[in-house]
Amino acid sequence: MENDWVSVYCTNKPYEAELVKGLLENADIEPIVMNKQDSSYMFGEIEIFVQAQQAEQSLNIIKSHNNE
Image (cartoon, rainbow, N blue to C red; front, side):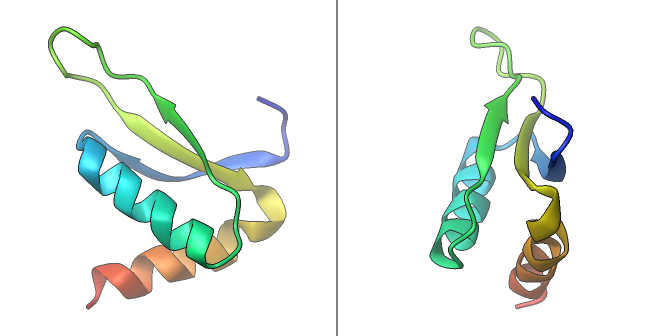
C-alpha cells in the first residue's frame, strides 16, 4: 500500500469493520479493508485504511459513532 494511506481503525470483529466501512462510505470516504485474520481460526486483525488527507475526518466520524 502506498504511503498516502493510513490505518484509522483496527478490530478483530468482522461486523465492526463492516460497520465502520459503511460509516465512512456514507461520508464519501473511500475505505480499504485489509483482513489479516486467519480463515480457519478467526484470530488476527482487520484494519481499515483511508487516504491520509481524510484520516482526521475519518477518525472524527468513528469517534462520534462510538460515543453514541
